[in-house]
Image 1 (tube, helix red, strand yellow):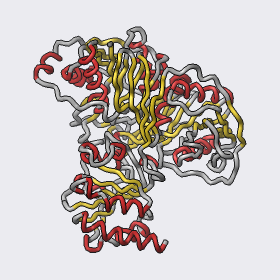
Image 2 (image 1 turned 60 degrees about the vertical axis):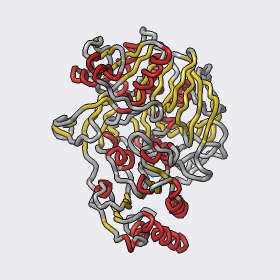
Image 3 (image 1 turned 90 degrees about the horizontal axis):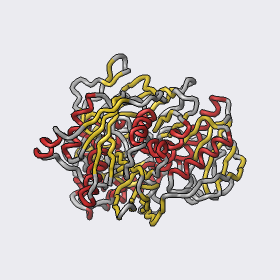
Length: 246
Length: 318
């Protein structure tokens, strides 16, 4: 089984979100980057489990600059075999999808894994775009994935519930919670990751389809109004008259 | 030229999120001087209310909505070709996340996922980023444009109009995906979490699944949907689909009542779009109070009966 896991970097959940240059740029000062949690905890770990059960190879793919390498090494430390970095600025979703598709097109991957969305852009759209560009089936928001030969049984989120479906490889899947449990890399993995192959490939030619013009912070909450526990019932009146929430 | 809106119905009924997408599409069409045409699958009664939400025409495709993103994107692309649509709108729901990216890639169109405001005249669209901790203004640079609309962000129109209905057919090709089983675990009549306007949520502070009675009772009185924190769904006290937070469902209801949830940053990321947040916790230092509009420091088992009582009286009077 030849598996590709696409990973993105994301600011650590506890990072302070601020912007510079008149709101045009994310302020990276003091920001710690991590592997986007959906990509790491669910997509990568499930890919590794499939490899451990049935053999094969797990390749990591990122689209980004040299500053991506620490998080690629982290994914290798967790257990991926090798990695590819497409040396392109990570701009808009379609551009990134075109980069991934251009690389994957002639590689005959059986499964292309993504996390369901990044925690910084919250788009949930690159996986479907890659599937379309490669003319592959796409299963979104998958919570469980099992393989028998080349046939995958996938449980995924649908409106108001779940459905179980079958799809033969090759396909593209985006992973949500439930797919696997987070793995912490051990020292042996971290040491081994240093020498695993990381290939840098040049960007394919593609135009940007969208561009972020400006960032801003949501208006701050005016502060919490405390209600005495003894008088908790007055909450309902406040919610009706003041907050107009009920 | 037209604006095409894909509106998903569930057994013939359109959820609020679909009506919001149609209303959004109608506003975009008005801005461009175009027609707003909705596309839906299966049989609906009349225009299903889509005319009232702003559509002038509804294309009904004589196919059931499938779970194959490729077939669904073929359907939408065929409708876009027939109606000359260069702007295509979806809800940012399960169907939208599945179909919209394929449609955008095929049309070489920019896609803004989860729009929270109408586009400006030069198609700059607002969306939430950093899990709701910031807002981005995204410029769309392509001739064809695809937008998915974040549920509970914009209102539904009430035009009083009725849309013309037109049967639509398209060749969807063969499917490569076989559905084996569909499980719906929502309780009868309960509004699914992503669409819910009122949510009552609880966490580990409830001390055990057997203590959920007051949470469910309060939700029932208010007509709210129940939710829970991640630890509670992880240990199996509550079903997984109730888990709101960074790795669970992201919601933005009008009212979010959190009981016995400390407010870890991962939980806040899933609920910080809520318009009014009420936090009930016995720990005055719980970080959730910083994000709250109303706070009650106290034991949930003493506080909840008082709120339930007041809610009952309120509902009886209104």
